Image (cartoon, rainbow, N blue to C red; front, side, top):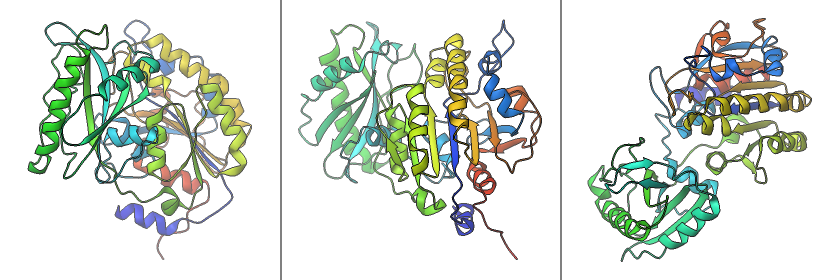
Length: 401
């Protein structure tokens, strides 16, 4: 926070505009047969052309070797040290669907999942059931009476939901029930401090009762909970950087994170094409744009190499629409890596591109992991992204005498 506050003192308001194009889970590792990552296998003439005029490097979301969650990784990109500002997945999902969360509430991110007869997890996402099915199951679970706190079970999207507990003396200091892998049993939620024992007992009861209601259901016959949290206190993006910011994202969690930071949020987008069109439409009204692409991460988590390649190519097809707006600074990167070969988030550094008329081009005509590894930025911390963007937008005054 010390460095962040010092940067805050240097920030000046200018008319220049900054765009962050974040392809969630962008980084990959080589396919064993193709010997290329998803980004290297994709046909990306527009990204490659942009790379030839840009400064390139790799970005560590948290620290070398640390595999990040999406919330922590995005906080880093926006200049909030995730070791200092901890936001559980639950509150991000809740804010994403504009749930009426009070400071004393406890919220968790939930997955409908599939377990076998023995209770072993077969599918953490229940086949990615449609949102309409999720809403039906949420309504069913809201019939559970915990004889204590009031509960809300709110659909998010596909298999995801939010569990909200409202009562007295509830603490979010609870462990996850989701082990993060198939082939294992759901974990017992345990209190991480004595003040969370009450909440732990209620969550335990909710899991047991939900199991009874879902037991005979096909596919979505269990729940997994993670990211227990409450409403955090964060300095606003506008306060720190003097920027009028807007978030454009199809998935609720990223809209939730943006709201926590005080960004405005464009709601009615449901595809990559709509995201780029929305940016074009609202470009005159803001000076910072967070454009989030979720599908790269989803494909990586599903182990679908070809689908991730196609998503990257779709983004490349849309890129000229963004470039036509002539942003003063454009950052293209990911929040973390999600290699399809690993079917999940990983610790690998993420390809990073910064374009601005004031940058020093590396003259490397490719945007990929191997090309970015040769870039002049080297490997940076994601926390360096905002200062670099502000500097190239001529929004930072001189430090020191």
